[in-house]
Image 1 (cartoon, rainbow, N blue to C red):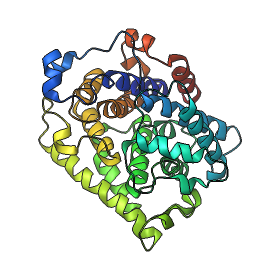
Image 2 (image 1 turned 180 degrees about the horizontal axis):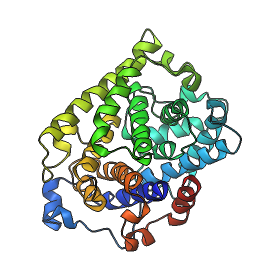
Image 3 (image 1 turned 90 degrees about the horizontal axis):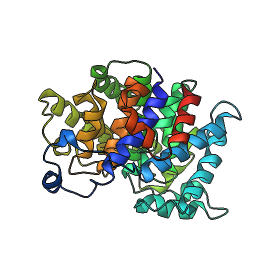
Image 4 (image 1 turned 45 degrees about the vertical axis):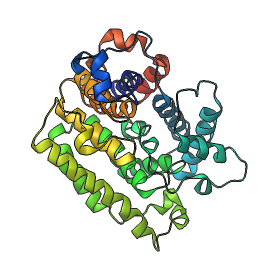
Length: 332
């Protein structure tokens, strides 16, 4: 079914679909596109920093795994190098987020610990818009997936909710790759959050928590999981009375912050689990961070339905297609 390829293509297609609609209200969008189900993909399917940074994470993961089983020691430096390379790239001209840019500037300074470069107060969606590759590598253990997902977030977004939301996002991708039924996801994710609520992954994060105002690592990480549990409550309410025609941001949030990006993207996928193009259109045609929402929605849909889920003419013109396909083939 080529689920990894499907996820990589899907996240990029969602990103490209949402790029021109970002920062527009639903009312503004309706003037150009009265029917959200007909939202077109531009002829030049250009992506944003979401896909660029996902590729950075994917390359870093590939480099680390070539040296042995994934650990923080093997993953940190490739991540740092890839993020700095992205920060310096002339192609980094897609309205990148301030947190990512400022943290990467600090990461570029020799001798600066990544924990000091991390923006401990930020839980922006930059923490998890790029995390999908961690869910696609089936050889990763549950601990490696969780630790790696949190670490890639922490290099730029050190807020505990960014860490927890990144883990949940990667876990969702993994569950879908493994064939878990979409309807089972909310309960599975809630159980995971509750089971890990006070687990601080020191072997992956080091002493990151000491940069916060919390008095213990357990209280630090519990805040993140509690906020994720809160947004899962909102997701449950949305699914209890689903309204596919409503702006998905009205219940689960606009997606500028990590837990809302995760929940609203998951909502869009769960509204249309067998119709991936409609799912990413619903995410892109919204009042929130449309490119990030559609990017994550596309990752979920592609992980579940595989590469064949996407229109061939869309997949053929997506930016970075060769690298997306190469990473997908590696993980498939």
